[in-house]
Length: 129
Image (cartoon, rainbow, N blue to C red; front, top):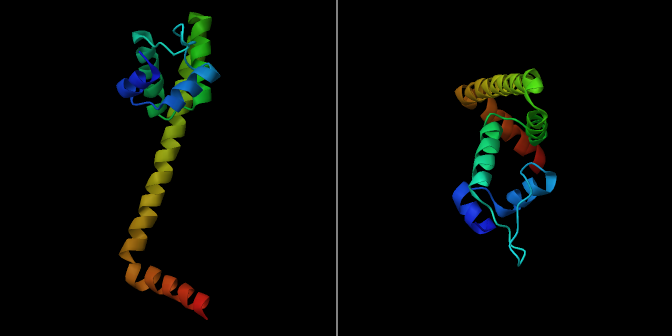
């Protein structure tokens, strides 16, 4: 599969695929004799795995660490599990922050006429003075 075909199959941009290869997130992609990347089904599985971890908020650095630990074998079980636990905690914190933002947005919407509208109009008046 060419990089264009891989992009169509996975929804991951060609630039991102090249970057993943450059940083070693995916294995080296074999090339044809003319130098064109030649992806196979195995790369779809790799990219699906990476996307699953990204979807829970895991950073590329953590994904790379997780993959490296996996290469080291079963003795890294606890370390890999800890990476997932740390990612979950970060996700919980993001959810908490989003809930706080939602509460603030709700407050501003509920008090728009009495608070936010006059404040923003007042600021505009200061700019035009």
